[in-house]
Structures are given as structure tokens and as C-alpha cells.
Amino acid sequence: MTGRARPGTGDVRVIRGAGRVGFMPLSSRKVLLLAADDFEDMELLYPLHRLLEEDVTVTVAGLDDHPLKGKKGYGPLPVDTTVDHVSADEFDALVIPGGYAPDKLRRSETVLDLVRTFDETNKPIAFICHAGWVPISAKILKGRRATSVGAIRDDMVNAGTHWVDEATVVDGNLISARTPADLGPWMKALLSALEN
Image 1 (spheres, rainbow, N blue to C red):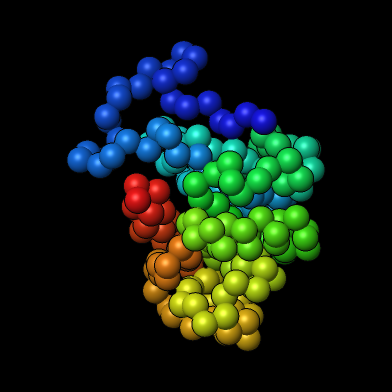
Image 2: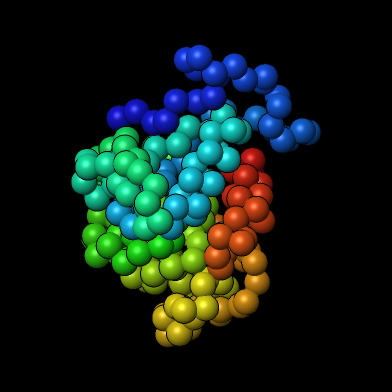
């Protein structure tokens, strides 16, 4: 299995240390990004590129090996592997973008097992917008504080979540955000978690 190439490989020139000033380098970190067709374009692309900027190895895993298309037309986006070929112990964090993709991801027992394992091992799980459906189906939100797009608030509350209307909510290893408008603080929280 291979992940996305880090900046500085190929024809791209990267100045080391040009990322987050005063922070530990994240080049040893590996993040699993779950994806399916009809992902919310910015909720996948922003974390993908932001993590690559920090020299994090990102592996995009799909339900199968076909290239993906965003709900707003981005694509084809190739996947690096499938969810059947990854293990939570290979990664330091999990990212789940929103859109319509989470409704497909939550139907995969393999995906739900991955999410549960990330949670049991206290590794960061970052989800945004409709991606809250995935941890709901994995049954890891009961008694936890989180946010999501307002459209799935009832689903979050019915799963036992203490839902709050904030841009980004961190509760232990869970890092949640509402919508693409909250991508900045959501990624700052994830990068901070990866430094620890």
C-alpha cells in the first residue's frame, strides 16, 4: 500500500520548515482519509492538501478501487487503496469528509470497525458536516460532545451525542466541525492533535 507523495518529491520544490512555524515536524505522521463517491469536494480536498503541506503521509481509502467523484464535480480522484486493505495501527489519525459519501461509508462494516478501532486506541478521528453519520453508525458518540451540519443534528442527538453549534469541537480524540466554512479551525485542531 502506498500513500500520497509528500511535497518535495518529483518536480515540486518545497522549502523544509515552511509549514507551521515553531511546531514539531509532522513528516512521520500518517493519516487515513476515508472517501466514497459524492464526497463534499472541499471537505476532502482541503484536508488532503493541508496535510500534504505539512509533510504528512495521507492515504485515501475507498470502498473499492475505482476513482471517486465529488458531489460538485471534482474528479476523478484516484484512491490509494481500499478499506479492506488498511488497518488502524498503520495510521496516526482518521479523517472523514462529508457530502453524501458518509451515507455510503456507514454501510460498510469494515469502515465501522476501523472507526471503532481508531476510537478504542484514542487516535484522532476528524469528521465534518454529514460525516457524523459514520461515528453514529460505529456507535462511538454516546455521551460525547460533537458538532455537525444542522441537518443531522437530530441523528447526532438520538445517538446520545451532546451536540453543540460551534465551528469545531474537540472531545478527547474526536474532532468535529459543521460545514466547509469551518475547515480552517477543524484542520488546526487536527494538526494540533497530530503533534501530540
